[in-house]
Image (cartoon, rainbow, N blue to C red; front, side, top):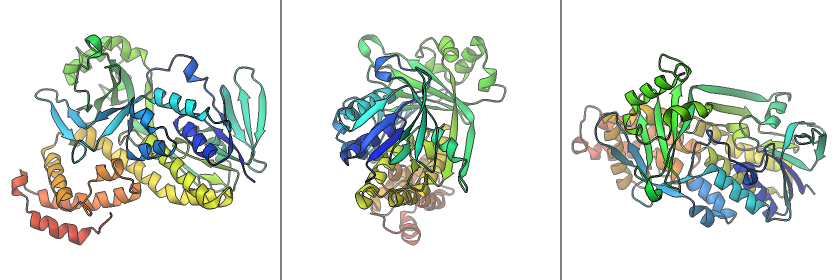
Length: 450
């Protein structure tokens, strides 16, 4: 019986998966290279607040944690656009207030998942234990205790790597024959800043929105926190006259914000100091295949499909990996020779699709959302969704508010974009749109998906 499982990584996906596995009766040992975040200061500057949506919510409901997480989540009903000059503009995400995404603290969610995991007798989390690879034939996983520098190996029935985009297990899998791997860095990096709460914890901007300052090739975003603050992230190219590499003095950073984000100057806390105190992060897309080797090891989440954060789906996609792997265990018991190929075949195309969708959405967020044609297309899209709710579901909704496969959202989204472009060609307002033509195009190009 393959009942003893080693997980590498106690982050969001690892902690969630541990609970899924314990509920199935498996004995789970989780090895985490970091110290216990519940017992020390949280690393600042690299969080990129999480946007919890339907896929992640589904997983949290399955392990019984959603109601608790709901208490620490802030609904965001749409994007609040901040132009350089002029009025703010709100763009709703869904059809009404019943459809929204949730701003959640990464560290708080991770800690609550670890707390839940440790309530199970079958789960043990080992901190400060760094994975250094594995023996793919014997199934032994190698670790170093970073407190004692002791090297040791662990034998279990199977190993699952949930150790993020720099996965030690995936790096070791590069030694395997016919293992495909690619990584692509975005030309942009990111800097995290903070807008503190006002008096008595008041929010200084609209609480229930994701704030965006779109500036063509770059942007600033801000997500609300429970304490009234906002976590801000600047996504900006490294290179160029005003690139991150050249914003190397406090005066340059301040001038940059004065020029492009003037309304933040009175909001951001210690702008010049924070800009240099917080690290500059990289943005990477990782793809590989296969995600497993025999019945010995499998990868999950960022370890096998890291994506850029612009669709808010990194965590949601990793949580959905856990859901699908759990369904494969339901189907195949503890036969890892069947579980892993089944899981991979169900997830690989969808992981590739959300990677592409995330890159697409970056262009939309930074560049298109202030464009008149884009805004008209959004109005047409909403009207077609209202008229044909079983056939024309907006791409954003398919990804965020439904659990349609990501690959379906990508392919249908492309077809729907063709319809929108055809209907809006040469038009300036929603009143000019020929919706009888729209009905014909929907019937020609799309079939029902609900």
